[in-house]
Image (tube, rainbow, N blue to C red):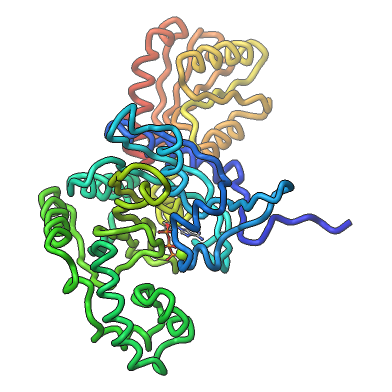
Length: 430
Ligand code: ATP
Ligand code: MG
């Protein structure tokens, strides 16, 4: 019978791969905990209206990329293409502002976009998002950018570029849009087909083009920075000053616009300089009107989303299988030694030492080979000699150094063992 295959653009995350995801989840959750961000989970599907009204009907996401369908009761449903609109809906619906005017939230989960699958671009992919809701202060924008940068830093990813721009308020943008349209119309024939289509529907998005010809035309185009209100300019300067204060290098990119309509003022992207094709690993900005647009009170907010598949493509080599290794491998030979091995294994696990017991009954050479394969930090050896002398041999896998200690002493040496394992993990694996 023909095999059923996963849907194009989706991927299984198999157990070995899952370890990387768990590692990232743990690191990120820890970092966000100390910044006092709380996790929120919203449904994977929503009413399509949410995205039409939130993201905007003339955006690529709504026009071309949404998984939209009617359910059995003929409701128009969309698999979420991004997380912010759902968070904003939940914020309004649950009256979260009553509980606390400032909400600092994060989410992590699958998103769905009908795009051409390639490395770093899937139809089901994962985003980690952080949102600071309720403040228009430039320190909130800076905090979001700082947190995103710290997430990368925490995973030892340093070769990054932060691009930042201000796209002003809707009024400034409309004014700019008209001027940009006027300018581009003169070069209509030089634009790529996609940009020609956008010229009447959403000309600002043309700035985002990857087409070299169109980019050349754009090099002399009017710039949004010349159309910003004093208030927007002030806000942008403030964000830039705070970034400098926090030693976060940035590049002002006046052509940076985002693919979603709800943004205003600050827009930013983080790119990896180790290009794997899709180099934008994080995108975000301020969205002061979204909550009002979705029926809530006027509530300013700022946030961003990191693409986890793209993050993993660059983080993997840094996560040196830190959590794939085990702490302790117990090798034993002979009936009595095997029994002691079982008891010691339980004892170590109770002490929260990740321990694997070899039950192959093969010779020590093979058992120690397994310990290496499993990246054990330490191997405990129990053979006839050890049984006779009531000792245990402790073999440190990295240095090959061996210690022989009495079983009675072993129980008292547990904190020494733990410390040495932790030290070895820190300096040999990560
Ligand atoms: P791109 O220009 O690469 O399509 P985007 O502007 O559409 O990105 P955002 O909506 O800003 O992306 O989403 C934030 C992040 O989510 C992106 O920077 C990227 O890392 C990730 N992302 C977006 N779409 C995909 C996808 N189809 N597959 C994997 N990751 C994605
Ligand atoms: Mg996209």
